[in-house]
Image (cartoon, rainbow, N blue to C red; front, side, top):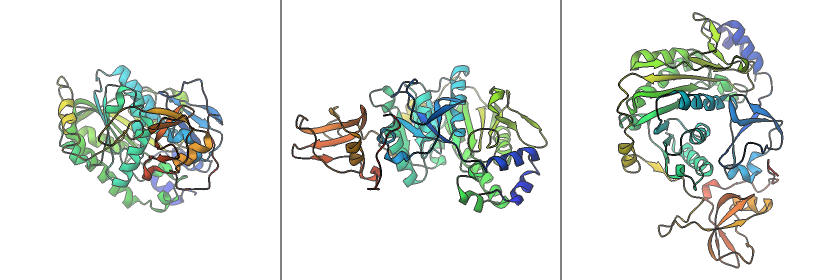
Length: 423
């Protein structure tokens, strides 16, 4: 869907016109297809079908030559990879830089607006295994999707299986836990200009008045959660939009009104990541800047903005992880994510035997069908796998095996052609 001329004219009042026009032209090209691989489960030298090249700013991200029917691939449901827009993977580079260069140990992290789970699964892969990660989503239905994706991504045999919590609360509820987090990722709701070519509704619903309303909402969200970030803690603010009202202006408002310093992160020039796009600033070079724009026409990806801030104050005390852990599940609503590896009947949490399924059986399992397992399969609860990757649980009765895959996660379509990106 082409960008309206009125949008180009409006944006050009604040952003260099050549940037706006190149962005608009970039939106006419096909949208790239990209995935991010779960390296806890697959080595880096094993590449998927249709692999083209790696995403420059994310070693685990890669572009594909086409968009397959991802739902029909059991390895997606097994958490082997996540279908994620390439520009948003820029967070991977930023997080790894922060972990390496900051004095902050990141014992606790919050993904504030986390659904459907792209950034939370990325966080879990980058943060140290002992770090506590709280992935939050305000809307209940989206929170359930988030819990599903985190359950599939997290490897239960590692420490991080019990250091990952999904919550379903408002930012102000988390803000009540003062100094709880070393790191907050706030990918706030936005006007979605960066997604114009993928979402026609974003174009149809856009207006200057909507931008003004959403920018105010973003400031309110950050204000509500701000007390939960400890002094010296890091805020990563991001949007999938382009205009400076929601991006640069809001970051500067956070710094001045809430009290924070900008964190300058160097970015390789060959990536074509832009810096401050405002006319009055005229500093498009990302180099070692504090604002980072990834735009169609400049990069292979959708529109994405990111900036990093460090909260003012004495950071010697660290985050209040103990208080946070005690409160989770008691004072705020949490969702279970460990549903695929152990028997969750209140009587046992014992790991169970594994049974390998064929491609066709794996899809039938994910559609929540029941079928007969091999005759030598032990009776009782067993874990079923595909290509040695766990899918979930079944209860083997001998004459049949009951399917224990969560009902709300099942593949609803009965007319799909099974396939896998890794044969």
